[in-house]
Figure 1: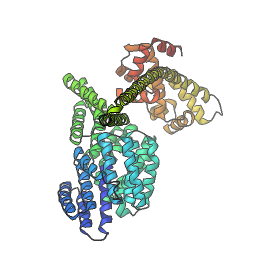
Figure 2: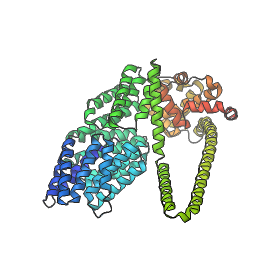
Figure 3: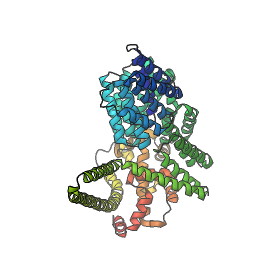
Figure 4: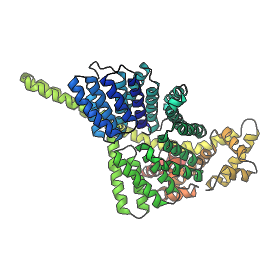
Length: 560
């Protein structure tokens, strides 16, 4: 939930600015004052003024003023990480949604607050999407460009959290709106729009274009004094440097991000500590890495953020175990398990709503039975029928899950078969067609990989490959991109993962994943696991266990 809280703050600021041009009144003065305190981060003042405002509004009979006071209170509690208080005041406002109070400014703030609450506390993506989508409609109807950009980027972030680049259309729309605004007044929005484009481009695999947008975001942040975005910009830049295997530059960006962490939101704070911890761990700086994970857990506890907590706990548990702190590792593992179970429950939010609806129906039936004794037999039959339907539905669901599990095992073998055939198909394609310079060089690269297994070299790079073949890195890169349809590092991963699946099938449980990763040329088990999941579709441990658990699958895989 990287920028959502900051976007809420700026949305509220824009709305309060609109209020200042309205007809002067006590209500407008109250809203303007609340907006000023909110955008300057004086949330204690917001709460104090709001509570007094609620009392005065009730005395005046001004319900709309009371609603504004309550929604600003909810928003401030959101920044103060008091989730229960947020829900309490937001629910009080929600009761008036269908009561004729159609003030678009009020409901824009409400949708922002509730959408952010849904992401942060309940992790209900569908509910958050609904709130933000309603906010887009309200902002469009009121020609509020600032709120429109905020809502679009909030929706884009939902896709970003889910690792999906399908949010690109929202990022592009927000970016176009930001470009058509005045730089002095909308510098912040141009900055976050550039960051939004960078996120989607990174998920699309276009790191170079993402880097360009981040450079623009950094310039705009400096000119518009948007200090809250520095940490996020440098964190994304560090991630790009890691992808490019430029560890020196990556650490430089991580340190820059940390120097601006005080101005960032809590999600960026946790992500920075988590990713930097992973970086330090890959380089053997385990004590520093553990400190990063512990700090991330402290921020997560303080902010009640659950979206990243299970990842941090898993990392801390693994590292504690390797450091010989087995009791601490066990504690972290248990906490991670509880957190994971909690997330599973949250992901099944729709099913929980169904259960709640069913309970409500049963309650209504009980009330009706008390009032109409003559229908007791009918109600009992109705309840029995409903129970039978639920039992049948649950049984059907279990059968479906069992069938899907069986199909998953078959999918593992099919994926293994595809991996083993892919390189042969690409070699056959390289032997056909016009023998141009790229194709000729590509054949040399293929022979080097297949016959000498050059991909097992731990320090492999475009430069070392070019040196081996007596050419330059640009020619090698172009040949791979043109003939293989992928970049150099993905090309190397294909060979390494194909070799990994072969060894896992042949060696069975005797294959140690950490040693296998080193043999294949990976710097760490984490990097190997990510590459394996990308190519095969499941972690190497799952692949190994399922192949050994089902001998018929192992035999079929070896037959390939």
